[in-house]
Image (cartoon, rainbow, N blue to C red):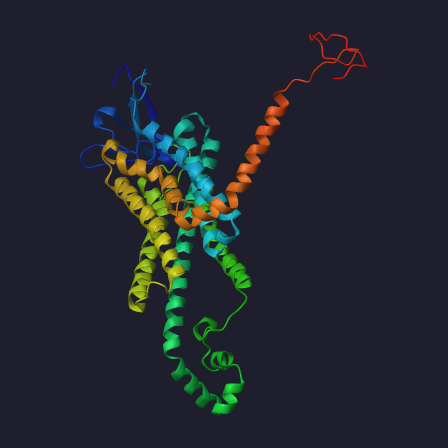
Length: 435
């Protein structure tokens, strides 16, 4: 130990100084050294008297060389991942603009998709900032960026869950509506018996409203119609409350556990900004990040399985249920892309190992914006709407900008006292001569 510098771990002062002495003699310091254990050659144990504890305690002294500031070797993922994230952002923003600007796409499905890609774009920007310059940030800025990254990613997944639920509900409603049409004669007879109405009187009243009153059936089941826009606004409000409130609750819980000093260190804390602009341990990542994501992915998978079963049972013909099938196909494509990639992300996080093993899956994960754009914008129907509605406006705007640029580049001519431009020689012309 001679000739080496040492520092003392003080878990009674700093939660990040928590340590565990293992049976093989190694020292586990999960917050300061999460990727490896310290061998007995790199630390020693000493007995210290701590005034605050009013007694002696055994604490480790971690050894390090005075000139231990060695640059880390070049790693390809430090270039690949930020590049993929920044490439995805324009495609995500373009997808959001297409579904916000075209009225035919601005339905409930389009609104939920826009919120999803907006959160994903914000999360990718924050993650790229952390990977490019996270080491140069101070602790406070690093903590703020970490909290924002957690919030945007979790909001992104909860909006994905909302999209899956909306798809499941649309397919379920269509399936129930089709089933109710087949059972309509039976329902009408039961409604007559329970309401005590004969055939002639029953024909004079609104059948759907009577059946709805008797059986408390949804209006969709009996063919009734409600104002779709008002329902859509109310449903989207409920979706928004769910998709935004859960990430807010999770971020509040994370903040309280992380920043309140009275919470003991035995609780798993995020410890944002202590080691890096993210969680300081795998346990914290599992509890506060990957745990909610796994829950969302599992519920999404259950809803898609149920939706597929209803599609199969209904035995839709080619011309029926086309909108529902298209919505299911698009939403399932999005879930498949994000689900598979994030399942591989969870596996790579849990399995660990060299980073180059996961280059392919992690790079595809960063390019999700390009894949989402290909699924939702390069669709034939969407491209037709873009060509018919957006492209004329874009062309008009570009032509206008080009004309303004060309006009500003033409220098005004300076006129002399005779009304002619300078540097030009004109011969005298008689006013009596014909031009």
